[in-house]
Image (cartoon, rainbow, N blue to C red; front, top):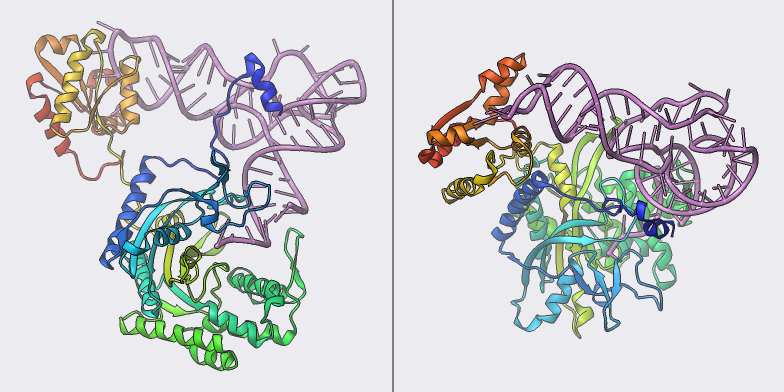
Length: 506
RNA sequence: GCCGCCAUAGCUCAGUUGGUUAGAGCACCAGAUUGUGGAUCUGGGGGUCCCCCGUUCGAGCCGGGGUGGCGGUACCA
């Protein structure tokens, strides 16, 4: 309101240059590193026989499965707007719901099982936090049309392969597997089955989900009367009996020790049919992974994994980085989850008369990227970005000559550009420096008269500059600069580029 | 959503019990150098002191309300 008032004021009509909160720009270095990372993931997925797919960033809101309130904009968590035909559209908040829409729409012509991967930005209209943005990238792979635990096992193995290919050492990550059916079974065991207990089940599941962050005591509070956090905020608990709390905790902590949780699991779930079925599926997945050579150091059953409470119907996965790192204050923290997924047998069925089983896995690209930087994976380490050769403009009336030199260089495959600004030579040198140019081409009237050009190596020149104390020396030395016949421009530049040491810092 | 902290130049921050024209460092631009990156020196641009209302002769400073940012927590399909 005060904004629009001040905009009407002529003297203060400047617009504040800023990205909306929770949204970030990404520059050349990060883009290049991210692309290298995505290429690795893509190659692993293709090796497994998955094919590429892209769907639009915008879907009909109802296709995303978001409940649409009567009148208000359905902006709770989802960016939405109305089309000119009054239909509600939304920016996708994940890649799974759009995939389900695509498969349902093209069901008859797609091979089943349909195995695809896709990568792109997703949007969430939520409060952003450190490392949490309102637009971020996900990389998904899914098998639609297979109910076999082999499909789930394969997804887990593929996730493990991808992480290792990216430079995360075996032992620094683990793919944790649990099952919604097993969780349901536990709920039954403590008497929380039935529709009227749905709300409490949700509270219980959320509490289990916080086990790694709050520890057993915090979860115990959340399962009981509730918990008050450091900021003084109170979270209402599930109000379970002490016995029920013990049951849940002993179950959820079962996987923390190692890989021997399965026995307990069956004992606990004897009474529950759905729980027993889930446990059996988990065992199958585990056996398939073991048979393929993936030990518990890579793929492991962990009863504390909850994830995506809404549409998962069976096994759920989570890729956890287990190595410790330090936050800004020096406290040791575990990096945590970089991806997750699971079986969602009901999603495609929302569009069709019959259900279609599906399972998939989603990587949080920027989170994984941050993790790779922490472990110094060579895939994402910043490489000195080498800018273009810059041809300086000394005689403005000879722009065409300079442009021709640039064109010659480009024709030979050398990245080159003409200085397009209006500033003098000193500023042009600074510009080239800032662009990380390997070298500049100089031809003023003197050189032109002699039919020559000057080639100046900026990296060697900067190095030489450190040893020069006075400006007079600096001027006289003209370090790392050679003249060459104009006719040899291209070959001399290419030779100079080839000559440069491989290890250069820009 | 809830709780807490914060808001002065592009960045990091000073700014006295409320007092004249709001400062520094860094960064940026230019000159010293007809045509050479660095260093040095000199100069320059850049501010609605987050916004509004109030108290006051007088507000960057005090009071109230808002907005925005940060941290925690909740939610996260």
